[in-house]
Amino acid sequence: MRKSILVAVIVVFGGFVYAGTETLLRNDEPDLKTCERALELLGKGERSGFDLLIAPTPDLKNGQTASLIDSQAAPLRNHVQSLGELHGFELVAAAEVGRSLRKYTYMCRYERGRIYWRFTFYRAASDWRFEGYQFDGNDAPVFAESSHSLPLPNRSEAIAEQPRPTAR
Image (cartoon, rainbow, N blue to C red; front, side, top):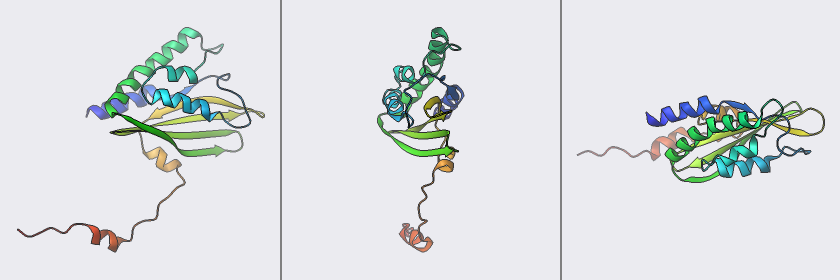
């Protein structure tokens, strides 16, 4: 029950956050290195990871930025602590819409669960811009995004491998 409440809090507070148009380096390819540096910190529940992703913009001043980060950092830290030790993160899905919108999904792996981070990039002309992020613990979108499928086990082999009840 407690885990469900924490996941709900993260989904509500995690939401989808637009980080502004002038954050992260511009390049021919999206800047995943900055996202991964942020994940190293965020995966441990450290607030400073948000600072790498969210920069003040003309429409989001320093005070508003700090308030936005604080509103997300505390629930994330509490949830991360409930999941136990961080065992790393990995890129689990990538998607492109046309030639100007990309989303990369990472999974932070913990002892007792996982958190997914989705980073969105947009290319208006020739440079990619970091647009925003989303984090949650919901598996369904990741399976929908993933193009990697596994072969199904042969049903007769799967049944044969199950332990048979013993008579007493």
